[in-house]
Length: 184
Image (cartoon, rainbow, N blue to C red; front, side, top):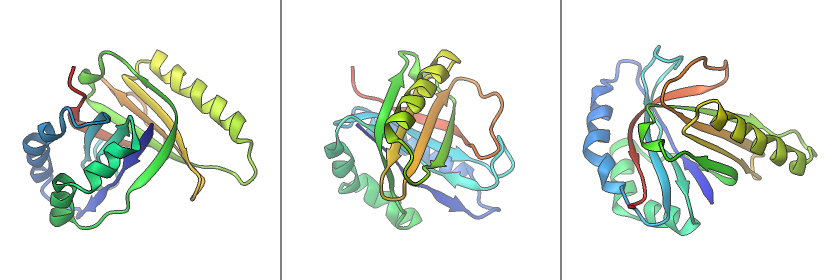
């Protein structure tokens, strides 16, 4: 499995209803996409749910890397880059992914990017992140993903929620506009 996210920081006066409309129109196009665990169409408005910026930043959980490659080489991503520019695409090797059967009820997402200290025990970090993933699921997360990226030595904690409570100081929160899932 792999996790993937790209994002666009939009101007402070950007009409975010354009993003919300785009998500409603384009979101269902990825429903059932091959090798997709889920795609969360995420947005944040400046000064809402703790966001400092207007953002459009979808997050993907891929069952197989071929799915990510097929998407990035396909017309959907080409349309995104044509509308918003060429983003940096972050990817993480998934250490732990837990998805509730109620994932479709997700309305909010949180994402933390953590730096990994040089020479840290990756095995210990993996165990701790896996435990954190399971704990967040027990606290009500509808999906809980932890992964790492060994080029920049970052880790990701991504969660989908029905309701959002407190947001950590370094946590980015989003609204979920659409959730693309595999076909049953």
